[in-house]
Length: 359
Ligand code: MRU
Image 1: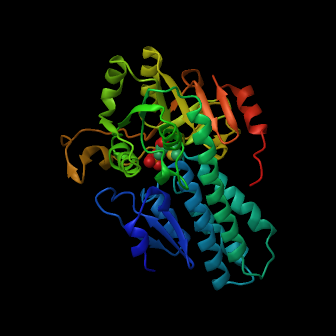
Image 2: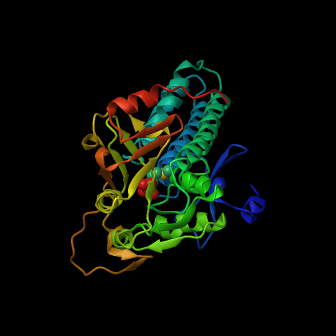
Image 3: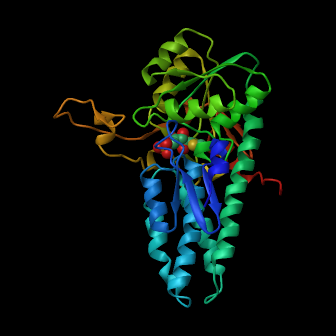
């Protein structure tokens, strides 16, 4: 497929593209130096792309997995028209195993699975699956825009904000969660300055958040992760605005490693913490954050930087890539269904009960 027209005006909003039976992912490992799309044609390739961080960010992982189910359905039907429901199961399992922490992955697979169960045997499932995947993708963009407006309403004029990792268009179907709030607040003229933590080891902040914000004409200043507390001590920081990979029923928030220390430092400096996430990130089945599975990735991610070995030979490595911020360090959880300030189970249950308006 010719993506040259798209490439000329590529933004994070175009990171996941379905065209003519193929899934195209903007390879986020290569940004911002190279803008390259990978073409995927099987669920196995899709699962591998999620594991290898071609696509990352909780909602984007869920959307990608939904398109992966479309590829799985099409392939299963081609190989065994009568038995495709059985043939698809191994692919679904592979997608399920691609990454453990972002609950959006399991949410999307459950939703696609529920549709699959109702589809007739012997009939090609591809069109029905594709309609559902596109619906998941579009609903996410809409949720982000709604969240952006709700989150911006909490921000006062002249605010300084720090964000962590990349919770932008690249991490979602488009517009972003934390960056959606920052985009909406910036449009309203409320933001004085945005700081982005570089976010070791994958540098999602330095590579992706900075790229996205600059494309939108929003100036951004990078901080080494360890500089955030010192920056708060200087004054002028009003909000930490981050996304999430999974929020437990009591409001504990799993997000990129370093979010917890950012929230502890924010509490010390009287800076407020906002978590922007769609309700597909809320896992009501987990009572607290201690039950959230935390992904631990390979040692090579810490031993080197930019493909070059930097660590001393023989050093051991522990590389958890998410942490859990307790609910009492969070000032507001912003979803498309509303805002829970000083979140707890009761407030989250109430927010989840708000039904979204139909489009
Ligand atoms: O390892 P990553 O890059 O997938 O981690 C992403 C994050 O931690 C994001 O902050 C989170 O998924 C929210 S994205 C809207």
